[in-house]
Picture (cartoon, rainbow, N blue to C red):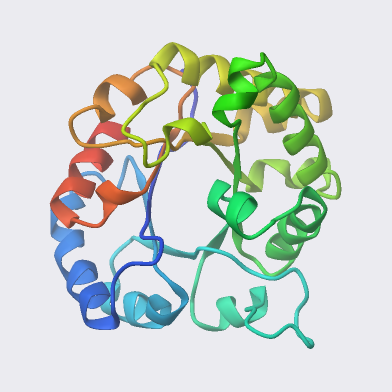
Length: 253
């Protein structure tokens, strides 16, 4: 057993207007009140609803993260949002490297190698997503893919800062497909990621939190997340309903 506090993060993707986000933010705190001392709860709205969500949560001990960010503080980057801009809104972190960003928007490891330290420099928690596609898994390239992503994306993070990063292992073949990695597959991948961090720092490997993301739902969360070594979940579609998300938060403890 470790002293790592589990994390449960709701990635809303491109869902929820500001009124819908506010309604969720009001409904969620009483549903998870009994878990907040044991689970770190995050909500990750679209950019348009970040300020609304932060304000609606009020004093609730629930943290807010953006779904992306640029690595520069400012500049001629039309359509982008910087880490200092997020921090100004009271945002606590940012998802970076989600498989949808990598696949649909050509997010590169080179860009992520700049985003992760930029988030840390702004006082934000980077939630770095890594994971293999179905083709890579079937070809036996899961470990090679994870090694490339983890080593490249964290290359410019100081060893002493590694534990401030949250890593989300998301098997791409289990996102939005209804398929799930087994708990054994998830643990195997997460243990491999932790070993990669240990090459840099044993202390960081022990402290860093590595969560699972891949079609986690209330019905399967307890089974998927129960093994030691899985530090929580990054939840997609099932996080859109506060009651469903609260059930997954309970499983994360």
